[in-house]
Image (cartoon, rainbow, N blue to C red):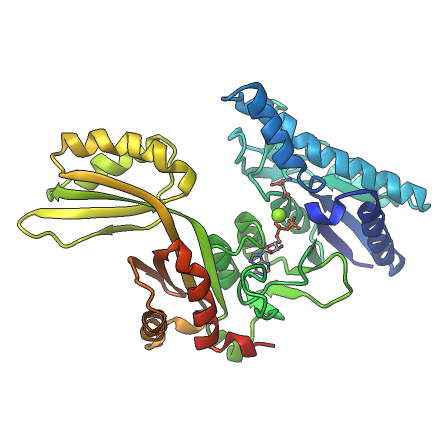
Length: 406
Ligand code: ADP
Ligand code: ASP
Ligand code: MG
């Protein structure tokens, strides 16, 4: 008898029929002789709706109150799922994050799990219960409720799988696995049967909003195999794990894209020590996370500094940077929104020449202008016009023969 952690996303529990469908799937596992711990997201668009409600009441909602409000979405779905299981004749109990022993720091809306005390879960399993845990939430030392950041139920599930030493974490969602590109953008994308943690983490960080990045990090650290599969169809899905075969390692594995890119250029910056700190320290203090930074080689001690951020942060970032640019004697500060990024990702790129050349050549044949380029050992990213991102993904998918992936 194995212990399995299953996680069902928002679409999978959106409505009574879908909750009953999930209950039937859990029962199947249970009938196969397994102990099951289930983590659920809030139903459908509940979290978005709760956020809208809060902002309608107050433009600057208190972070502690907001987290309590958002945590209720997952409490609703977990209790309904327990009731569905009862209705089908199976013993089940729902637990909030706090009841499940999930402790976090106090960084509201993006809390990190600091420890899990699973005694209540274990006790309920021993009693024969199917345990349903409300995802995306925890509790501080002072018993204040926190949430783990959007998409955080994935992290709840993998963290529980790690602490309970579960055989696997099965993540059920509205697609039947991880694809070589976002299937909503590129219908011809192919499902990957397996992928390594490192590549998966790079993919989710650079645009595949297919699983929460912290969940992949935790999976890698604790060696939890994660299976991504459909909650509607009986299909094999994608296995995220360590032991990916050599042959598969030797390729580009996916084309990630992200349309949420704004760019700021500080033009004509006097180039002397400390300038970058003068610009980026206040941005960090304002809570703005910077993605790509490029500084041109200076000519006559004058340089341009360009960086990218999320679109929603452009106004705040410009308000921080403009006065600094004036005070350091820069010529001007230009910010605009219409950017996107496209990345090729795969461990096969490590120490192998030719990938960058093929990427740039493909984009040039499509007449797509590259604004900025960044790389890691297993990724090359180009910042391009937002309007050309789809064309770029399609062309690169073809050029790196991902349409042939099985
Ligand atoms: P859930 O609500 O189950 O947590 P998410 O919406 O968080 O599900 O994640 C699943 C979605 O991720 C899919 O609907 C899909 O559009 C998107 N996605 C983006 N890139 C990919 C990819 N490369 N492979 C699979 N899904 C992807
Ligand atoms: N309900 C939360 C969200 O929509 C957490 C999750 O679904 O994982 O972000
Ligand atoms: Mg999600």
